[in-house]
Amino acid sequence: MIWQSIIQGLDQALEDERSASRTETEWTKIQRKVVSMIRLGLAPEIKHNVLKETTSKALWEKLENIYASKLLTNR
Image (cartoon, rainbow, N blue to C red):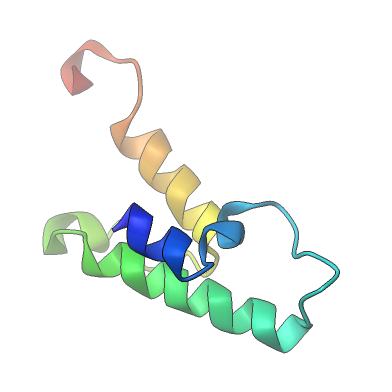
């Protein structure tokens, strides 16, 4: 999935800010595509934890906070 987003130029959506070469409308479309792609790869029981996130960066960070923590239970 990650390589597909890079090919499509969607990897930029995980950056903090949009580049100057993109309009706000283009940036919003890219964000929606990436959020949709990430959500498609999630199981339903995981997806409900991140439904409120609207940007790819926020969604990715939320998933990292929940599932990539250093706690013993996540190892």
